[in-house]
Length: 59
Image 1: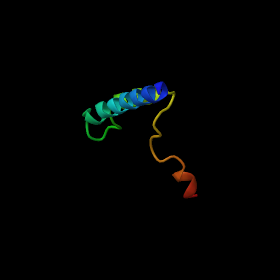
Image 2: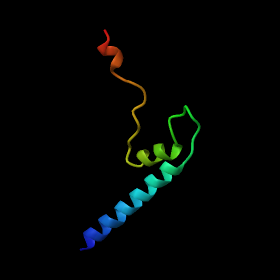
Image 3: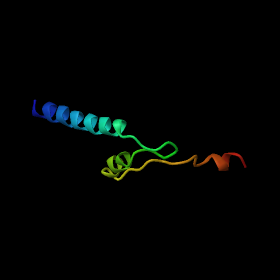
């Protein structure tokens, strides 16, 4: 019962963080809001930017 309550709370907190990111406005042509990078960095993650691997396929 306690695990379910904690999971539910964690899910709500994560959803709230993502909603904040979705509502953050950033300039066109940029990669996105800085908050998204900070959110991923909490778990030592980062976005993959660009098209890595495509140049090797065209050779």
